Length: 81
Image (cartoon, rainbow, N blue to C red; front, side, top):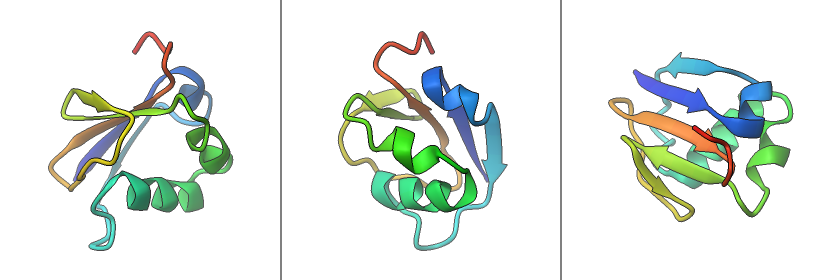
């Protein structure tokens, strides 16, 4: 089960989510698309250019692999998370 955390402007939508990811969710892009369907307003915030993703505490603005054993966080550049 993946643990997804939300910081900065993302925390206005949700605090935490524990979920089994579908098989087709394997990277940042597919996870963002999946969460955009589940959480109203998520897609608009995630599309902003300063959005960062952290997978197991490794932060990146680029594509990253994700899976059910990961702790994943979405944040803006100055989220304080």
